[in-house]
Amino acid sequence: MRRIETLFRWAVVLGILLCLTAALGSTPARADTEGAATVTATALNLRSEPDMSGTVLSCLPRGTVVLVTGEEGGWYKIWYRGESGYMSKDYLSFQTTAQSSFGTGIVDGNYVNVRSGPGTGYSALGQVNEGTELPVTGVSGAWLRVTYKDQDAYIHSAYLPVSYLTGSTSAEPAPSPAPQTQEQTTGVITGNGVCLRAGPGTGYAILGSYNNGTKMTITGSSGDWYAVTCNGAEGYVYKQYLSTSGVTASVTEMEDTPAVTTAAVNLREGPSTAYTSKQVLSAGVSVTINGKSGQWYRVSYGGVSGFIHQDYLSLGGDGRSNTTASTAGEKIVAAAKNYLGVRYVYGGTSPSGFDCSGFVYYVFRQCGYTITRTATAQSYDGKLVARGSMQPGDIIIFYNGAKSAIGHAGIYIGNNQFIHASSGGGRVMISSLSESYYNTRFYCARRVA
Image (cartoon, rainbow, N blue to C red; front, top):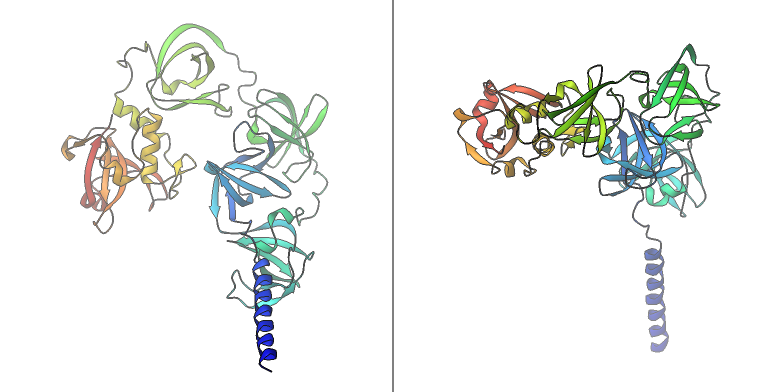
C-alpha cells in the first residue's frame, strides 16, 4: 500500500513538471512591434540599409504612420504595408500609440486572448487560434489594435508579429484620377532614388526610380504630385522631389573670387532651396566663387562645386583670416537664427526638432566648436563671463522653475536678448532677459568662441 502511495505521489510530481515545461515552452518571444512613428519630413525615403547609400524602397509623405520594429544607430527599422526597411530617426516622431491601416495579421499561437484594451488587465473578448486573420488598425506599445467580431480589440504583438502582416487592409488604389492639365514645363529631380509611380500616391505601383538631375516633362498635377513623362514612361512624381525653379536658369561665369561663409550653410546641387544639399559648410569656411545665377553663387570647395545663397557669403576672404567676415560670436548667432521656428522636441539635436541644450550643442558644432550635450554640462564649457560683459555667441544657463538645479540653456544674441529652443513656446525663438522668468533664473554665461 505504501509503495502504491509513493508511486502516486511521483506521478503527480511528474504531471506538474510536464505542465510547467509545456507552459514555459509556449511563452511568447519578445514582441516584434515596439511602437509607431510618424514621418515629420515633407517626404522621407524608406531605405534597404541603415545608411544614406541604401537603396530607396519607397518615399513616404509627411504624416505617414509606420511600425517601428527596432533601431540601429541613427535609424529606425520599420515596417510599412508589406515593406521592411530603414528610416532616419531625425525625421520620425516616435510614439507608442497610433492609428492607421497596417495590414492583415495572421495569428501565431493557439488559445490567444483578444482583449478589450492594450493590457492583460482588460477583459478577454474571446480567443483565436493559429492562422486566424485579423485586420490591424492601430498600435499601442506592444499591443496591436485589431478588428474582432466587428469591434475594436487588442492582441499582444508576440502573437501577431510584424513579419506575419500580409499587406494593407485598404482596397487596391483606385484608378489614377485624371490630373489637371497645364502647359508643359520641364522639371528636374532633386534627390536620389526618387520613385515614379503609376498614380498620385504612395499606394500606387513603382514604375521606376530616378536620381538627381534627371529632367522630366511635367504635363499636369494632382494634389501633391506632378504628372510627368520621362523617356517615354508616364507616371507621377512627388512635387517635393521635382524642381521647376532653376532648370533653365543660366549661370553667369565669373573670375575666381575668394569668399568666406558667414554662417553654417548648405552647399546645394543647384541655385535654389529645392535642390538637395551636397554638404553643410560651417561658418568661416573659405570658398572660391566662379559663377552666379540670380541670388546664388556657384562656388568650389575642396574639389566640390555647388551653390550658396549670396546672403551667406562674405566676398574677399582669402582663407587666412576672417577680417571681412563677422566675429566668431556673430557667426554663431547667424547660424542659430537659421533655425528660428523649428519645433521643440525633448531630446532633439537636429533641425527636425531641438530641446534647449540640443539646440546649443547643434549650432556650436555647425560652427566648428565641440561642446557638451546637456545644459548642466554646458555650464562648465568655455570660460565664465560676467552677466554685464556678455557678448553675442555666449552660452546662457538658467535655473529650472524651482531654482533647485540647472534647467535651461540658450545663446546670447545682444541687446539683452537670447535665442533658445523653448519648451513653453514649442519652438526655437528669441526672448528677452528682462522677462521676469529668465531674469530671476539666470545662472551664468559661458564663452566658447
